[in-house]
Length: 293
Length: 239
Image (tube, rainbow over all chains, first blue to last red; front, side, top):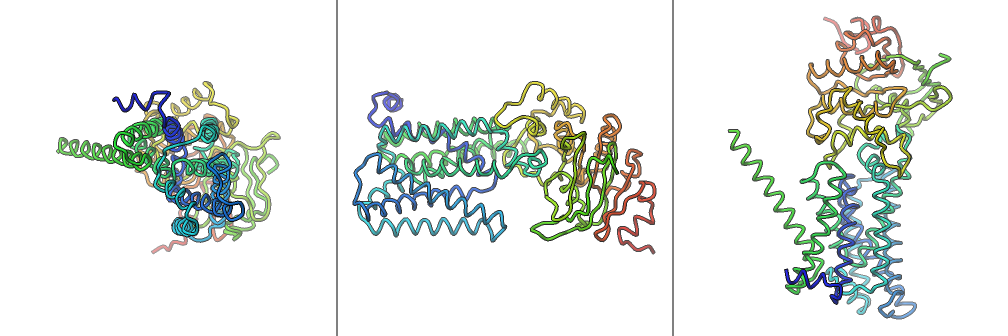
């Protein structure tokens, strides 16, 4: 409790890291719901890895032409540009291949994950200073987030939250029953574009703050828990966001108390919650069946 | 037919640029109740999707105009095509039928919610509004999808195999519902089905269209559902 009070103090030194985690914890699950609903979970694994490769490539490129930048807004913007370009580029290519029904989606995504991961390692291995920065990102150590970066994250994720809320019914319709959407005159291509754009921004911006592992954790685990506990898409969405925020807050407190890396602590905590929920539901089913007999 | 609400004019339909059916000519008039029959894989669902605008014709033209405006479709897909990872409620599924009228970004109005509740009442599912859709029986899910189609306030109700995979009693209930909707609301209806017995028992079914060897054969239900016609269309052998 003391730890919670300390980290919630407005003067807490690492408050920006907490706020960044909370912002991601609230919004990322709302995006992850659509990845799960469309059975594109592996994309939630691969795209953060692609984003990281984009960051590494951007740093290497900038270091090659301009030397190593100081830790300032330009540094963040370089990373954001690299992350966004590669993430959106990959999304477009995957969408085109899927539209033309070329190959198997799971195979493409798996290959993407492997290649992006390998590319990241090879890129950072070529430059020591870049390697240090990227390693922290890969480990999910959310320690210090400058005010400007936090503001960019808040604006970006705030926009995503507004879009997902305002266009909730259209996005759910094209996700759950595409043919019905077409028969009602909906331009499913436009809504797909919006959704993929939202996914791209969520991942490319979020990876800069929390890294690929934590990004995937927040995208997928809270919606999986909410899907087991809530009925109705709106209830699932609200519960996923609340769970994400709770995991971000409690995970940060635990990591701060035990001096653990924040990101992996968050993901592990979410995993524990999921395991408890699954076990509780299995136990309830067992008790019910035993009572019936 | 001059006043057809849907008219196929030498239409070819297919997927990935490859035609499944060609040279289709078919008119659906106001107030029609047409049963679309044929062997598995002959293209019945493809024709239905062409009508609903879900797939575009590879050749020819599909005209769907009523009183100078586009026809509103109430499309009831095969239950298996709806893939729900998250448990939407019955009400949420039925509300989807209103999304064609509600502009993007606008909330569902109270009037639309009341309309949907009335549609659920029409299909006898008022008490199950808050239940998760995946937890319903096959017959109940089918009725929810019909309610969803009604919520679109359609000019034309398109049903793709609404009686498949459900027990006889549930099939009778659904067929009674569809016939009642057609008669009480004058709702033009096109239905794909294999339940010949259910179709024969309903006087509401006026015309039958057999999809046979890429051709459309249309006639009155009494003639097209006669045993010799059925055997010929299904390529069955007697004896």
